[in-house]
Length: 127
Image 1 (spheres, one colour):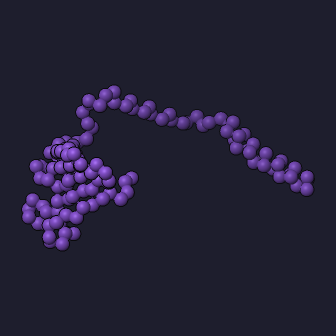
Image 2 (cartoon, helix red, strand yellow):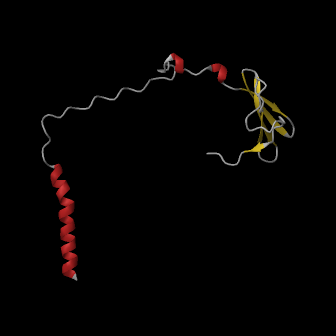
Image 3 (cartoon, helix red, strand yellow):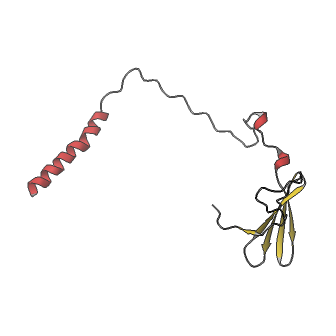
């Protein structure tokens, strides 16, 4: 049994030492060095490198109006002046959302039953 263990250890030493000896060989003469990495921007005030057609439109940023009550906080989200969502955070309990399913064109959301009433929605999971 000792002979088997000794042979196993010797063979594993041969396997471990062979890659180490291969690394000691000299490298070829025709290697080309990699170019240097560019320096990161020094400040965030520099102009974005995106083309003008891909720049973010500031009018699409939501305007948030926050109203504090004694029992709840109400946040109204608007884009281009149109209210599209309300987040209500009660003093006790989880926040819930009311979403405007009607569009500015008068069309309803495809998932709406036609009543125009928004059912409160709670956040189940955030990742």
